[in-house]
Length: 611
Ligand code: AHR
Image 1 (cartoon, rainbow, N blue to C red):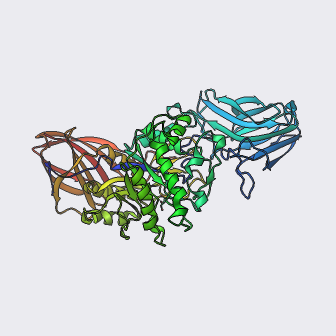
Image 2: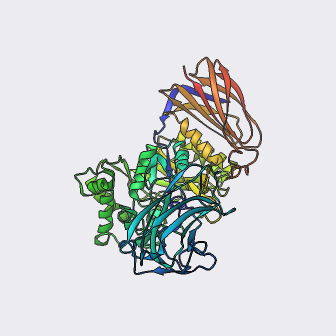
Image 3: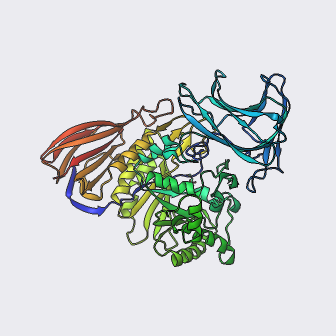
């Protein structure tokens, strides 16, 4: 028996409950959301050389490539790739090839915009021919030429336009010459059409997936990505601004180099494009390998960086960093309410966070009293030590553990800080969650909605994964993609549906006799006059329920959206993207009584019109 009194709201639901968190992990940005198609466009060198670039020598062509540490187009990129061609002719071309981020997603009748920095030793080398080529057939999918002038470094642009080809990702790009000569290359870029046509923008399909989650905020820029393995690998936001050629890039904590093409301004424009607010995490003097900056004098430059960063986000053009943002192309300040100090600082077992937080909080409060501060030493097994406005708590659990934890916040004191569940996920599937994970997530979301007087924000993590072999570092990520398409995991559907039917208050309710793996949430939308019911049956048997709904229309037509998986392991993949998807139906409810059966392994989102 489930009794719901929709006329009695017992606690508020936070309008900002559901948001997004991402970071540079699983090629979320480079090779993902950031639309750049060329992998290692600035020839960042590793011990293996400059992968994944390869030399082309057709027929009798002779050429070498080397890494020139002494010649580059900018202070940030003082190096380049030197292509020295001693023999080449038409049909015997020499050059370079790049496989992209596991392919190039090509579509019919589409223009791809390219640019590169180069200089040549003489004009004799002739033009560079640029071709997008099918891996399977060797067919040229699009072609352009760029004539490189001898003399100083210059930036060149090119366009590659496809004809009526079939969409595909198994393609690569080639840059070839058919005359001898030497050319130095740097920052070779190729962008597809982007979301809102922003230059240096994002992939439309991934942006649309995020938009469909109805998020209210974006926590940025991480996660571990904020902290870096070492202090010098932190997200040093000042080095991520301005022309791409002036961004050095940096070592990310997930085993690959970040171009910082998606820098602080691009993060903020991403927020703008999704119509969400940033939750700005500032580096708080601790990096993952365990180093922390001593508080006091040593910390001052980092505090100044945080203050400057807030000014870059929110200052008007009369401020130093507001003016810098305007020069970068965005005169209007961005909205901001929350600043997070660090990430997962409960992992700093030296206990330095208390003093570090205090120094940051004092400076941030003094300069920006209007913003709420989020601390990061809170977690279920760890007492929050600092007195912040909001405590960020993270949960990564198995389906069973997530379900078992669904009562946790019912018992948490309401006198402490508000809670931001800044990272959470039910984890068993890989690369994306399976239906068992979606059930764990749904159970957990019912508890977050019920406790949303306390939990004011929550964001699943990680959000994105490039599922191509080599793309993933962290299994169980919400949205999978490759160079061409994206797919929604069962958990993605559960979360999008919960967020689309959130409500603004929790209705009084009581339940008896249900199986222990049955979970529910009952919220009301006062404006739309709807009762939103979320029913989660995570057991393998049907759950009959007799519902008594006070306050709904006497002859109510309920809409039901259900998500069902045959087993816990059932899932969606890049090749079977729609195996699990929402299905709509309707039910007539008369006099507020409804005998309803929730099938096994099913999540239902039900809207019932209120009187
Ligand atoms: O979401 C993956 C990682 O999990 C985050 O970078 C970190 O904050 C947490 O430990």
